[in-house]
Length: 284
Image 1 (tube, one colour):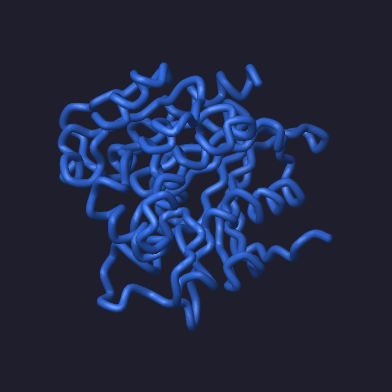
Image 2 (spheres, helix red, strand yellow):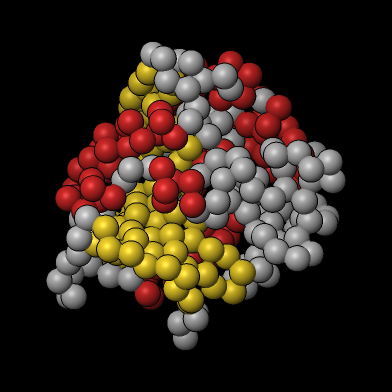
């Protein structure tokens, strides 16, 4: 039985429809909001799906409003899905100190095992199981041709999900991802807070550790701004490059001079990523 989905808004754009929707999630126990862009097409035509996972403090709205993806998606025939980054609503626990890097807006794409977060913070299952079922039921989506990308915390999510589901995702890319969360402050706080102190559990949500432990995909595209103020302390793309070289994964790591961590950076290279995804989705 299809899950009831409420349309909050829908507008015409580049010949397609940009919608924002909401549903009651069994996975998180909350209402969840997400956006979907669907290019104009014949009613009997299905299209590949590109998932975009956002970073700390973001909702679906950041990339929807600032990502500049619709023209390319309309041309290439790609459905673009942007979920939220955490559960939200009354009674959902947050960082007790109100910090931006844990709790609301910072679900880190894991299923929490630690209280009080375990009930609601189940973003891994939401992204990999519940929301794909909704997309498949409600949109002209070819669920045999999916790809995934993300930014910062969402880059971490896209890379780890792609590595653990290599048969599902035909392409994986990231903008300024948290490449090795087990080795940086953001990751220590999030993985420790959601998963506890079992470092073996952390490795399942760490791109570099997954590659070290044998996870494989054919290739990756990563763009990283050289003027990103989080580059040295939180992102550490050189660790990803080293892991991919040892594993034989074809990583295209593009260090972009002068670019920072913002959506000015993301929107500049979004079309490059979508074309890269479209090539691999067509081959799949």
